[in-house]
Image 1 (cartoon, helix red, strand yellow):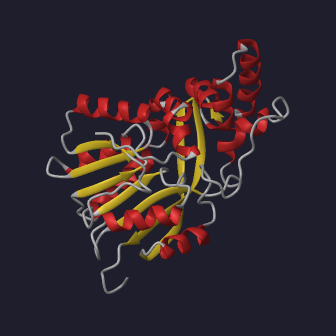
Image 2 (spheres, one colour):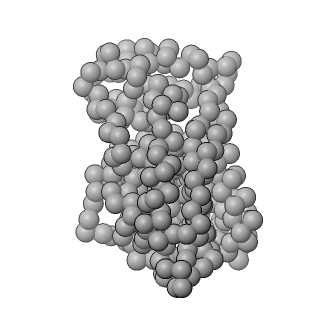
Image 3 (cartoon, rainbow, N blue to C red):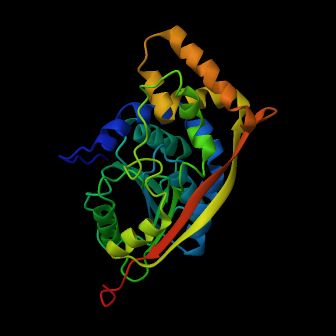
Length: 289
């Protein structure tokens, strides 16, 4: 099911285009890399005895599908994303697994009219940092949660400084590519939720209660043979490389950047620590609003 919105932010355009296509290409690598995060979302859903779950920024569907498998056929696990290529893969994976409890819609979670007072749990694995107006987004999402009992359970990145692995490629390429766009602090994107105090205040302003923002450090790994795919498709450098017709220049840059990842390579495995936030909150009762 697709739902259209007359508004398309720059982030929406990006994820419906090259960023979404890159995540599809690297889906298996990313699922392996972030498996521990999906497992934590499942644990939270089981602990909450959730039956209706909304997975925000579901991407290629790994978290939504894991939730549906864990919660069983009587559950309803809805994944929402703006990216056509990522949702196409998510729906194909759902059909292959035959998981009737999982479903997907294309929609902007900031503006989509979800069924009100409906979800037991709203989850996200790195899917909430891209809203152009986070307060509006979480006000809208709060209305979709069951008043008084609906919970929020999110994972988001801390700062770029705390996640050197995530910026290795662009830092290594900076000398060769001075034109590479720099990340803008506070702008929608991977590290938009870096300031935990701001996240707390933003969710409180959006009407959520019992807001908690706790550090979450997770050891991640993937196969060393997939490192070139990772650095050449994802992040600012990956997006830039996808648009370059000069094959020789691309190969030169990839070879140079790959060397910068050596501190993270251990035999046939790439290992790094993901410095994130575990964010939780509760939808208020009518009296608490």
